[in-house]
Length: 297
Image 1: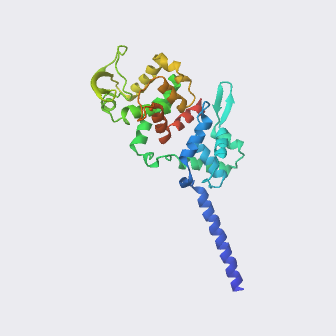
Image 2: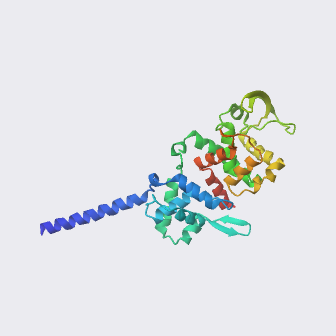
Image 3: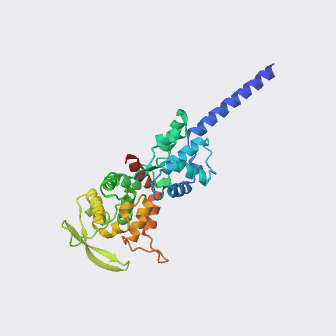
């Protein structure tokens, strides 16, 4: 009798431990098993020429549906989930909200809550998590100019991800002298059309020729961001190449390059500006800001 009681107690304990371990394994999304590059690439493929989908929403839904077993998820599963966020509209496509998608999937309240918990856990996660920490200089710079970049989009249709990525590239994360002293984040020169303050600085032309040139001076970084968008709008070639009609950051980055915004080339002589912007945007999850504003649209 004692042996039988002992066996029952052991089985009960085992089941309890199993349920506890199982619960805790579901409580936290398994970041180590997320192929971030794969999710970003596939979600961007689905978003192309339509509207930007948030890859973190996609991976969080899939994690819940698969009880956190997310190591070998098929490409089709990722794309199908991403497609749930895209809906045709009178003006092309619109982005479905997370709540709408969760309702489509008929998830129960506990699973819906878990999806949102997973999204919160992924807040500072991405291709380079150590650079995405809340207190990193990279995150701080992005947050510093994010609101103005969003305002810019609403007025000029330059995507926030593009504005921020260009500012990062042109100002070395706001650490160039032109950015720190003169609030010029984009290296815009003071041509004959400029009526404001300017400064004469040494710069390199074609990488190896040092010259002096005049650059625009701003009283704050927000002025620089707005003037950068106005600069693009006032130059007809950017409209000609479809910069303001682009639906996603990949399209807009390529349109800027095709319009001749930068002549930068890689070692093989290929234009590299669009590639540099796209890599920055993906590395720092800037495309998710585009997704946020599309929901509000």
